Length: 211
Image (cartoon, rainbow, N blue to C red; front, top):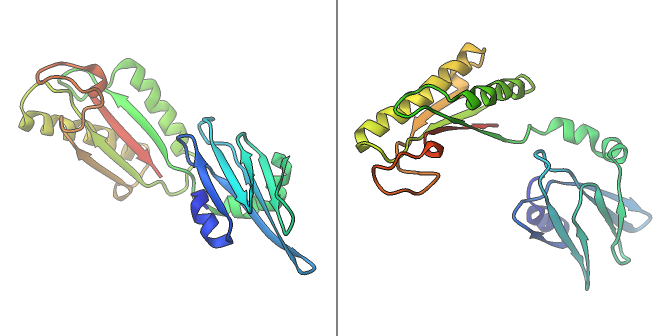
């Protein structure tokens, strides 16, 4: 399940997100006699970044603010404990294995006025191919961008050319063409806002979203 608030609507208790990242949760529900118990475990973010969720039951809050922080809810007050990867695998292994891979983003940068990758981005491309090898049916969107040098028409064509060059590289690696969509945004969505006519290397990019 993806957002904590969606889980809350289903289960009848309330959560709120804390910080700037959503949290991936594992949730188990079981019965003991006439009582319903719910266990919530905060899973690690794929990129290692922070995530936290505030779980509220009645007048009490339990903050889950680190990987494998967990709480159990029942007719009594919620209590916090530290789960383990083994517990997650034992309880949720089948469900986690069945869900699709989380989306991954890559950004490749280009030499000015060309569809040729920078040296550093060649290394990023290799990392992207390694990630794709782990996914059975990847769904990929490739979006080309330029800096603010040149006309709209010129940059639209260059952005599209950059996106198509990445798409071709993916297809050459065995990704079916129908699974890769390429588009160009020209200079409409600058990563770094600059005046017209300014060459900014960070704007000369292709963004790849792999789902």
